[in-house]
Length: 319
Ligand code: ADP
Ligand code: MG
Ligand code: MG
Image (cartoon, rainbow, N blue to C red; front, side, top):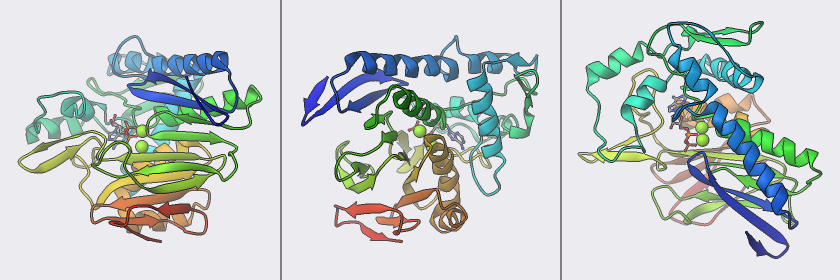
């Protein structure tokens, strides 16, 4: 616990990252209950260890449907819908490829052979994730298929934390799940959320985003990657090729009411790139994005609704 000017910060390590909760009152019991809530959801969704309900689904692939709890069913239904968005690159059935690449988990990273990746691609069709609403069950039609909710579990959980804190009567708080920041209300002057500088020290910022009552999600290729022969391989995979997405982006940040939308849209926009992404967001006034490109441009989907202050003059800011 850390206290600064009326703000109390509580931290824990959950979902493989440091998690931070900021409250405007001294309430270690509330912080402990918040962290327990996160842990409960982590145990439902993880694909990195058993037991978890998502692991149960994966282990029964090609054999039988698995009845799951409501949150798991809902998140998978939502992830399947996102996987069918045309032009996006979100795919909940990407699991076999994620496991094969193991980016960020191994120290002896190597590029998998092309024929292996091609074989695994055949196991990633989201249409083969079969949902039975009445039974509340999920069935993976082919043996070897694996669901991976790594791109959206944090968003779903951040929303549940927001709801929980709201029910507890909290009007101002910030939860940082590592990549997903969610806020309730705002202190005087707004929450200044730092936008990380890609491939730099952890505390280096390109600028600050001011939000109130919003989620801010950043997905960056600098978070987990490895290099072979000067080429960088990061952890967001292109479901069409089986290789990491290769485009002009270093990171995508989404500002939205729900963190789940932030998670879905960071991944979709990663696949779309700046131009197509901004065009897609014109139909979505409730969702805004900030792209950071490899050639050091910071591009906002709208400067009317995005309050961004550039702090690093080696970047240029445009909309
Ligand atoms: P972080 O883990 O840093 O929050 P993201 O939110 O960007 O990162 O999600 C990346 C994770 O999502 C990967 O580690 C993997 O588990 C999963 N993933 C990778 N590629 C895709 C994809 N195309 N569609 C859906 N999930 C993906
Ligand atoms: Mg994430
Ligand atoms: Mg994401």
